[in-house]
Length: 305
Image (tube, rainbow, N blue to C red; front, side, top):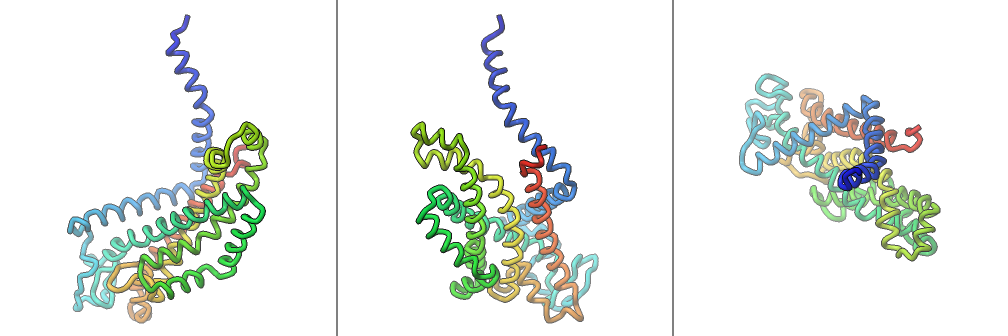
């Protein structure tokens, strides 16, 4: 006779195999997309670097070549060199150091605003799709009103009312992302709640809360994750645009959009002041878009075949 412990272990492994296999298949499909894989490593590298720079800054240690706020007027407008890798701006500040210190602000706005938008939009979408009727009509009409405004104009209006600051920019971008999450989750909820096993669970007496959290929400996580990744790119671009207009980060904060604003008057004589912050925004937005596209393809059920 075989050992009962061994049989139990085999049974447990057998029950976990489908989940493990699905996870491995997902990773395998994602790795086939080389551009998405490279974008993932770029994003991971940027996050790690920004965290390291920020942690050292909290302890009063500057690990960048120069302090991001150190003014050196004799070196103003200096082009890229061994001392100033990305050149110096109109105040003689090191652009490379300012980009590294501003990375945590740019990525932070992207992640926090999208998280806040999902925190509001996902429940609204699930409630709207699950209950339908008047609840669905009221929620969707509010979402339609928000969608009637172009995203950047909606964020611009909110920041104009609240005042210019990074916190208000984050709130504005979060509000801007709520309608997208709500509509996507509502559509997925409508499809999921019609499945036969949901009807069976409801017939067994399961309450709405259990059905929503145990069965509806896990089934709509894929579109939530994919769209959150894509929305981060949009959030970064929107936040940079608001800071460029002077409604976001205020000087001398080394935020990338504000750095573009600082250099726009010197583009002809010192183009490097706007070139490198612009390239930084381009890399981040492009990396998140490509990563999101690859993640969407990997999570697409049609790709399993």
